[in-house]
Each structure stands twice: as C-alpha cells, then as structure tokens.
Amino acid sequence: MARADLFLCTDGHIRCCELNSDTPSGQPEAVWLNRLRQAAHPGLDDPNAHFPTRFVAMLHESHAKRTEAPLTRVGIVYPTELTEDLCMITAFSQWLEAENIQVITGSPYNLRRTPTGVALLGEPVDLVLRHYKTDWWGERLPVWADAEGYPDDEPLTEPLLALLDADLQGQVTVVNPFGAVITQNKFSLAFFWEEMTRFPAEARDIIRRFIPETYRLVHMDTERLLDEREQWVLKSNYGCEGAETVCGAFVTPEIWEKTVELALPEHFVVQRFFEVQADAEGWLPNYGVFVLGGSAAGFFTRLSRASTEYNAITAPTFIGPGCL
View 1 (cartoon, helix red, strand yellow):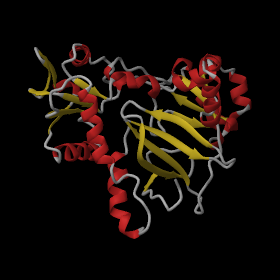
View 2: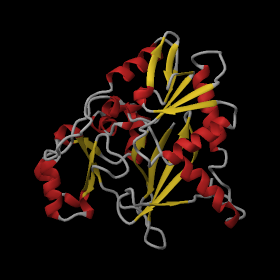
View 3: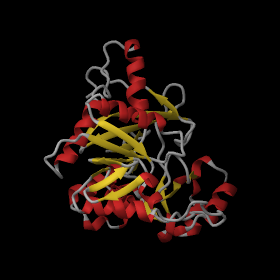
View 4: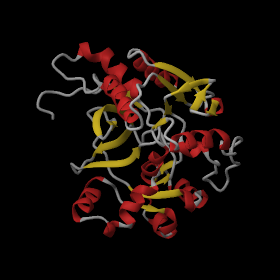
C-alpha cells in the first residue's frame, strides 16, 4: 500500500515529489469525504468507492503468498499515544470486520513472540497491519544541528526482533513489509538522479519526466544552495506531511541560510522546486494517488497555499466523463 504525491505544474507536466510507501495515510478522509459529497456531484465517478474492498483484497493476497490458511485475525500496530490516526485505525477495523476478520489493535510494546508466530495483546494474529513507521522501530536520530533529540530515542529491539523473526520464519504476514522503507526514504529519489546511468533508457525518460531533480545534501555545494534559494527544496530523508521540509521559494533568504546551516547533511536531500498550477481560488492541489498491490486505487487530494503541511485542506475528488 502506497501513496504517490503528484502535482500538475504550470508547464503542463506532472511531478511526483515523494513516495509514501511505508505507512501511507489519508485513506479514511479520501473514502468517507467522497462518500459524503457524492450526492452533490451527480454524473461524476467516485474513484475511491471500491477502496475498502480492494484494501481487504490486498491483505488477503499478501497473506496468501505466505500460507493457504484463511486470514481470520489481523493485528493493527500503530503509535497508540498519538490520536491523529485514530480515524484510519477505525476505518481499517471497520473494513476488516465487515469481512468477518477479527481485529486486534495495539502498539509495538504489545507484541510478543510465540512458538507459532506473534501475539498482540496476548492474541495470536495471522497478519500484522503495520502503521508504525520503520524508522521509529530503530534508534531515532535528530536531523537538525540544534535539536535536543527525542525523549524516546532507543530502538524497539524486543518487538522488532519478535516480528522480524516470525516474518522470516513464515509465521506471520506483515503489511506493509519493512522493506517498504526503501522507497519511503527520499534518498531513493536522489539515487534515481545520482545513478541515472544505471537505468535503462526507458526508465531514465520516466525519471526525468516525473521525478524532480533530487540529490543528497552531502553532494550539494552550500554556496550554490544559498545563491539558488528559490530553485530548491530541502527535505529530510524520513520527514512527512511537510515536517522537516523547507521550500526556498517560500521563505526569506535569512531563514533559508539558517536552514541550510542547521540541516545535518547526512539526513537531507535537496529537490528542484517546481511551480504548481493553482486552481481558480489560488489553492495548490496535491493529488495523492493511492496504490494497492501495484495498481492505482484512489485519490487523497489536499489543497494548500504553499507547501503541503498539516494545515492543508482535504478535498473530495471525483472524475468527470472522459477524464480517464
């Protein structure tokens, strides 16, 4: 399960600024908001109408690759101390329970290794639906030179080893698998550009067409960044929802200079700025395209005045005749 954040630019091109492939969010807002507003848009198709069904089918298919046993109990692992994703956990639970699949919810601290797999809150589960970021399972490191660090920076060694061992032994299915962090890490976008010659010609054309120029900060000249402030965006490798992202075109030269100074180069990339085509009211649409099992499965559209952050507005997304 993933979400690619796409933008229609003023030059007519589509740009993908990042791939949220580790623990993508926005599913309940996309599905439920469209459902609430469908009656106000007769004649338009809801691209998210079948998302719940396809979501459950994706879990079944993932589980079937490991075993022929039926999928009967799913453990949803998420940061229970945070409330912002409770609507997502509720949505996932409702969609699974509607298919007679029992759901257990808890945090990584509630995971235990058993002789036959893993248990969540003492209940054995067939599949772990992981909404706990991969980099949070390991040691958490600050990305700014003046940051004090995280109060809970120690790795979750015991639950991580329990889940990884059961996964490697073929005793539990993990969705998304921990390997999803590879494309979640923005260094992957830098790899596309820095190692362009490794790709075949067709892939190189796709990279140039859709992925803005992206490079690791350790490979970028500081003076060039300061001189070309309006042409670059600074992003941490695991930042999301606008956190640890600074767009040079949207800040003063003083703020940009301080940002470049404090960013720890080993944790950042710089990405070429692109100008998004605004709508009639001046909003900049971020079309988050959900992908389930390798196929597009819906839209999570957000509107903002500058870069997409937590204060962005979620908008229902419908498709008109002849749009596809």
